[in-house]
Every structure is written in structure tokens, then in C-alpha cells.
Amino acid sequence: CARGPSLRAVSEARFGDIVDGEVLGCRTPGLSVAVVEGDELRLARSAGIADLASGRPVTLDTVFLLFSITKIFTATAVMQLVDQGLVDLDRPIGEYLPAIDIDNPFDRPITVRSLLNHSSGLPNPLPFAWARPASEARPPLSRHAEIALRGNRAVGFEPSTDHRYTNLGYLLLGLLVEAVAGERYEDFVHRSILEPLEMERTRFSYDDAMLRDVATGYVLRGTLVHQIARAVADRRLFGPPIGRWAATRPFLIDGTSYGGMVGTAPEVARLLSVHVNGGVWQGRRILSQRSVAAMQEVQSTPAGQPLPYALGWHVGELDGVRYYNHMGTGGGYRPAVRIYPSLGQGIVVLTNRTRYNPRVLTHTTLLRPLTGLPGRRRR
Image (cartoon, rainbow, N blue to C red; front, side, top):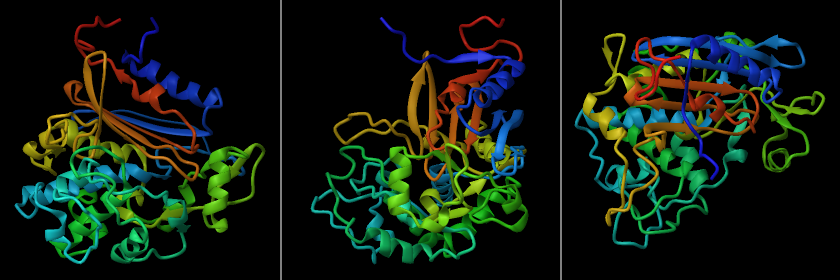
């Protein structure tokens, strides 16, 4: 029988070789990777080209669009409000957002928890049309919600009884943060997460320095993804093609709470440190240990059927080691984050190709200083 995916532990030198090999093998123009253990950065590696037209290389300061990795920031922000006693996971979202009109014909309400674990039943319209040039201001989150919910208000199944991934759920969670915190979602995340983690190049928009270092996004010309994007997205987002690649110009996504962030691999890795280090980074408590544990609890339906999701995280297992991950995709980028709490490690992979497969890297961990993986000999 064919063996399924496995988890491999390698030395830092070998890990760097794997990163380089992904670029040399033409699987993506560029890569930026960071690995944390506890609250320390153990490895940071960049490889390849950020912009093919100019030949500008990827560095550890290169900025990538994060897309749905943003959801981990949003889930963390919601749990910070839980820590403050301002949000109850099992209260109906309608009690926090009474003005939001959702067509839910079922007796069971949509709760904060069901939004976090994607069991709300809300649909998931593609966000290709909700991108704009980086030079243009986004609409407020509340205005974007009005636009995004048009024709997308109907709940497809009884909330909490099934699982369907939806950006709209995290759009509502962004509005929840605003309603409870009394400030813009972006301002709350900046104050409560980005500033304490000293994230200067991870945010919701570009400054001039970041624009000079942003990776150009690439997708193979003529592929289905390229055709869909060209049909739906703003034509101003596309730059001149280069060889076999269609290229994007710097852009941002409306609906900041489900996919609107940009950032660098070493900085995003600090958030992963929070989630493998009991809520603390460099002595600063970002989240309570109780909330970290709650976010890593596999969710289930009222009937006890497990869901493939925790709170904010997809859940999986390799060789008996539980992991939590999230990926994003679109517009020439394929970011991924994964944590292995039992190993105390987390990995960020940022790339500038839509169809890149990050699992080559996220299925790899660093040998621990003394013992390596449980049950394995260090070589």
C-alpha cells in the first residue's frame, strides 16, 4: 500500500537546501521561510526572485500578501476579547451585530464559535472581485460587508452541524471586533498584536519602503486560475507578462479581517511563537494560555461528530504528531503557516506563485537540539 504523507525532521543546513531546491526546481519564482521554536527564531531563509522583470531577489524583508493567513490574526484578536470578558464564544453573533441581516431559517443560531470554526453555514463567494490597486483606499469593513453579503445571506445548513469554509464568517468576526472594542478592526489588531510583536512590515497596507520590497505575484499564463482572475478581477491589477508568467501589480484585498494583510515571514513567525509558547512572545503575554488551548481544541457538532477545524486553525496529523495550519491563495501568492505544538515549532512559508505546494516545507521540521522528534533517532 502507498504510504501517506509523513513528517520529516532535518538539520538547519538540510532545511536550507530544501528551500533552495524549490526555487532551483522552478516550482516558484521566490520563497521566504521562517521557523520558530518556542519564542525564538531558529531559521529564516529566502531564495529566488521577488520580481522577474528587474531581477530583484527575495530577502527576509520582502513583503508578500498573506490572504487567509489573516484569519489567524483575526481569531487571535477575538480570543483576546474573550480573555477580557467582552466576548462569549457561544453567544449568537446577532447579539453583537444586531444590524446584520442573515437569512437563517434554523432554530440554532450562528454563534461566535461557529464563525471561528467555519460551521456557520454561510456561503463563500470568491473574493477575486474584491481586490483593488494598492494606491486606492479600501471601504470601511462595514461597507464591504454590505457589498459582500448581497446575495450571500442565506445559511446553507443548520449552524454548528457541518463544516464549510467561508470568508464571510471572518468578515463578521472583524465587525464583531469593531463592535466590542469600539475601534476599527485594523486599529485593534495593530494595537493588540502587531505592536507588541514588533511587526513593522506586517500590516494592512503598504508604506513606501514596503512597496519597494513587495514581491510581484505570478501565475502561469493560460491556466484556469489565470482565466478566472482575468475574467473577474480589476484589469489594473495585472502588469506586463514576462515569459510564461502573468504578473500582478501591488494590490490589496477588501475585507481586511479575512484576507487583507501583507507581511514578511520572520514577522509572521512571531505570531506562531505565541501559539506554540503558551501565548507569550519575548516575555510579552499576547493571549492567555487558556485561549491558546481553546484555539487548538478540535471542534465537533452538537451530535459529537468531529470537525476538521479548531478555532482559526485547520487540524491534521502526521506520524502521530498533531498540527494546526492555514494556507492562503490568490493573485500570484500562496502563503502557508503551520504549528506543531507538541514540538514547540512553527513554520511560515511565503511564495509568489499561486499554484505553489507549500507542504514540501510545512511537512518538514527542524531537528530539536537534543532529542529530535519523539520516537526518532537524531542522525
